[in-house]
Image (cartoon, rainbow, N blue to C red; front, side, top):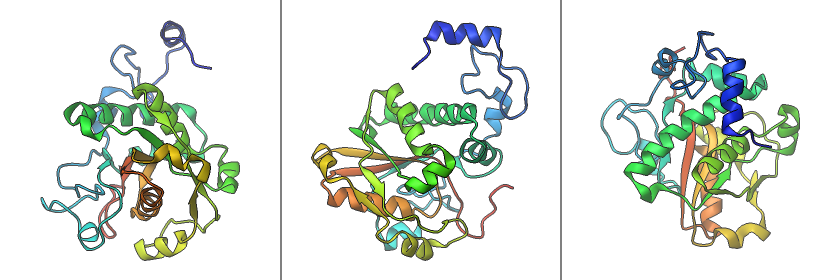
Length: 252
């Protein structure tokens, strides 16, 4: 059930919410992301030095990173506004591992703002459907939700784009944390599948895969290849944050 805008404004007035990062007072007329303007300015935005395909932070103005040049991905472009670093990583951790729905709403609003800006400047980036990156049922049961599904629903409702959970995770693979790209690809082999009954809905369509963080792009590569083989005309990646290349500082 959704709350009406007037009721939301009334609740914000009667039960003011502090900034999620500094606990300072919020101006509900301008601080629409549940963060004060000072904390919004502290978020680690990706600058122009990034791969134009996977958004990997780069040290120069190169158009593509080495991986995308050597092994072109099945996805075409990515909208990823932030570097995975402090304090954004703290908000993502609260959302995923501490089950804080306010952090999830905040992250969805931050991503939505950047996506709207990109779609206004280039309407060709607007997809026909949003596809959340799936979790294995065991991981979803442990966490209580799939963060990509929640982000997809929030974005889809705001942008008027349907969400289609066409992909499933077949295998409960070992944690991807700490693995390099090749190890992640081996870990993900045969881990995903598409639901055959939903494949007709993506024929010739432009899709956007939605997730919270892109680490090595291994998951994005596997899923986009799967969707293109199933008939999608184009796949893009939408995510909140991109991790730096191995060896780079992550701001912590």
